[in-house]
Every structure is written in C-alpha cells, then in structure tokens.
Length: 249
Length: 254
Image 1 (cartoon, helix red, strand yellow):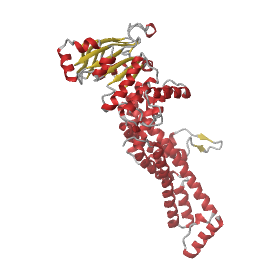
Image 2: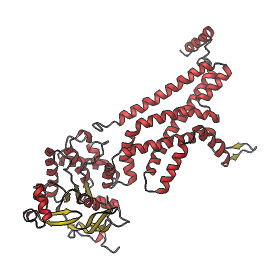
Image 3: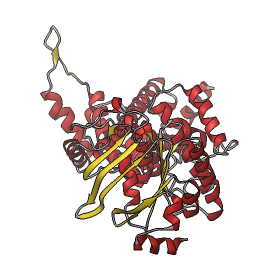
Image 4: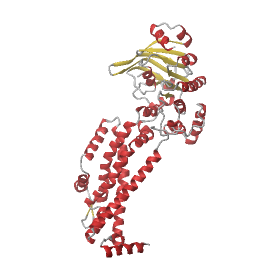
C-alpha cells in the first residue's frame, strides 16, 4: 500500500515533473510528520491554555477587586493591540535573554524556557486576551437574575460562575470562540520565526533542499485546510452537545 | 454591634425580625423605616401598589440587597452585619422569584439537586432521592428530565419552589411568584404554596393575589411609598381597613 503510493508519486515526478518528495522520500516524510506533530502540540496546548486564560480573565474582569480588573484590562489591551509576531520576538529575544539560565560544565547556556515553550506561552497569552473579551460578551448575555438565583441558594460568586454563569456564557460565545481558535491554530505558524520546527518550518526545509516550492506550498495549504476543518468539526460537535432543549427559542 | 447571637435564638422568638429598615438607591429612599416580625409557622403577605418597595423589602431579608440602615434578624443572624455569613443565612431562607430564574442548561431534576451538592456538599444519591420526592410533591413527577425551556411557566415555578425546598430552609420568601404566569397556571402554584403553609413552613409573600392572601395569610401588611400603612389579620384587614390609601387600593384590586 505504502509502496504503491510512493511509486505513484515517484512516477508522477518522472512523467510530469511535479515533485512531492514528502510522499515517496521517507526522510522528507518524517520531517513533515515531525512538523505536523509540533503543530498539533502547539495548537492543542495553546487552545486549552487560552481557554483557561479567557475564563479566568473574564471572572476577574467582572469581580469586585479593582486592582485585578485593572490588571486584566491592561493585559487585554497589551496583547490585543500588538502584533503576535512582535510578541513572540519580545518573549523569546527580549525576555528570554533576561531570564536566568543554567550553564553546562563547558559553559554552554541552557535557557530556562526553550523556543517551543516560549511560543506556547506567547501564543496562549495572545489568544487568551481575545478569549477574555469573548467570554465577557457571553457573560453579559446571561441574565443577572439567573446568577442571583444561584446566589440566593447559597452559591458563592466563584461557584455560581463555575456552575451557572460560565456554562451559559459559553453557549452564547461559542461561535466567536470558534473564530478565535481557528485563527490561533493558523497563527501557530508564527513560531517558525523562532525556529520551532512546526509544519511551516519543516516544509520550508524540504522545499529549500528539494527545490519543490510549489508542490510543498500545496501540501502546506492542504494540511492547514484539513487541520482547521478538523477543529471546526470538533467545535460544531461541542456546540451540538451543549445545545439545550427548549432554550432560546 | 451588641445584638443577640444566633445561638441565643429560640423558636419562640420571631424567626424574621425587621426593625426600622431603611433602603435608598442613590437619593431615592425606597424603604422608610419598616418594622415587623414573622413568627415560626406564620404566613405573612405583603401587599401594596407597584413601586412601593415590596420586592426590595423581601430581597433585603436574604441579603440580595444590602440595607441602608436598620436591623434585620433571621433566627438571630444579623443580616446587615458586614461579617455576615451569607451561606448560613441562605441555608435558612429560601427564595422564589417572579421570573422563576431556573438554570436553563439543567434538567428539572438537576436544578433541584444542584445547590445541595455544590453548596452543601451533600451526597449525590441521597440528594437525588430527596429531589425526586420534592418534584413529586409539587406534582411534577415524570418531568424530571425536562429542561426548563420545555416546561410551562407554572411548571417552571413549581420546579423553582422544589429547588428552594431542597436546601431545607426554615423560611420561604415568595416575590410575586404568580405575577408572570398565565391565569390558568396561577392556581397550581398557589396550591403548592398553600400546602407548604399547611405543613407549617414559615412563608413571607409579596403578592397581588388578594383571595389567596385572605385565605392563607395569618397576617397582612399593606405598604405604600416605603412605609407600612396598615396591617392586621385578613379578617379585620379586608373588612375594616382604616387608612384611606388602603381602602382605595383594596377597592381597585378586589
């Protein structure tokens, strides 16, 4: 089966000149798969982390502490108003060199966080800032009286948020959340700029060695189209699972 | 504050006690010195024209609205105390709202089960047995798995009553609970409240249902513009109201 596919792409190259090395050269294939794995790692971790940041940020933003509200608002402004690539550079080249680092016996510098970790941190904060605002829009759509009923039953603010307000807010803001998470998945390609070997990085390496830019571009575009399609499918399933019978109609 | 302590409270004292309660929203004074007692097992109805502060009054009792001045005690708990243990208060006081305010993402059964599990940390299986019994008590057996959006207003309101009872309160507050209902479903909710009252539950109702007040209440308070104008047991209150404002109000609603 694998040999047949490999043979087909090899013949395609010999007859038409279209050189999809990834599909017949195991070395390129492994590089591509490695990139894909890294993209998945970046996407899954940053999506989850940004959701947590969004949920916690929105809770603090509507909370009683003026200091915390101000901090959350400042965070949102900073990360929403600056380009994500600049943020990644700032974290990796700016903060990364300021942090203390370990040194090996022969003096080699081992940074506290490596480039993959900086990319995850930076992208999570970037998307998290948007998620704070998205969750806030959902929370504002939950009737104040619903939270009040929870309060009257003895719920603390946090418990009411967790069991009543957030689950309802989530349903309202899922479409907006979908958009932001799709954007986040695509923005993981920026990790390329600090040499994180994700899909774009791996594919770029392949095309500069094999001189097949057009072919690898097609592979790259198809890869992201499929990945986003997968994410959309998962989010729609989630949306359906959360649908409440008889609600909002 | 040198007041009585909750552990000194005994059931022969008023279960709810208001002394000269004031409440202002900005410069607008809604409550201008309200005082009354509710004794254990009593059914007390508060009636009066719209905007007379009835809902604000009832919401002060479980600290949903902070008072501006005055004293409110529930079983000896000082509601206006800044160090108030809100959970301790709200375990004693159940509340039912005009708009039901059920949790729309949970089934009727889950609505009733949530607070005892989340707030009191009680055992899920034990709570479920109790919740099913409560739904049967408010005549909603068979509707356990329905979501609020699939129930009529009267059914939702009865779920809300069951949800409140699941916390085993000593006092129930009803804030115009039939005002948003269709006329034909008002009765089923009133029947439920009447049964509760007959079982000895202490009930404090803000209501426009004069016939219900006449039949069920032990005591009626008529409020207008933030003060209690007149009060008395239903027999005397409806038959021989003294104040002009009360008489005018009664002539409009009866």
